[in-house]
Image 1 (cartoon, rainbow, N blue to C red):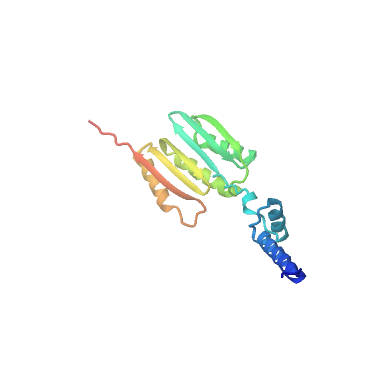
Image 2 (tube, helix red, strand yellow; image 1 turned 90 degrees about the vertical axis):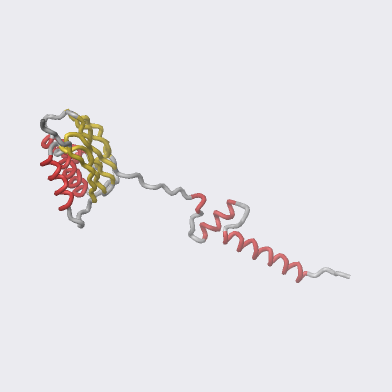
Length: 181
């Protein structure tokens, strides 16, 4: 009959060990501790245990409504905030400023950010009402021009902006026509 066969038993045990080792290596092992340990041994972080966070957009905006100017969003540092408020005072000395700025790390380089904000405030100065919004490296200007001359100035500046600029800009500005009777 079938007698005791040690070679068959050893072969079966060896086969089971190989299957278990390759199963843990491939990450299909049912035991999570063993799977994590095998992944660590291969210098691989299991995807299920890794949280990937998407970086939020870096946003700053200025909105002009009547005699008010509302500042919102992030600034890279307190020094940049003071610089920005100085630019606002220079461009809009008669407006009431509502400052809702927050210091937020991780923004664009200081020179790039200040240059884009300065350009945006210059454009906003031509508007009767409107806003500028800087999101990462994109600047959007929208609103109603104070006069036909301001409208032409905004459109001309938008056309002349070089493609090599580090900030992309888009403009949606209208001009109110006054009809004389």
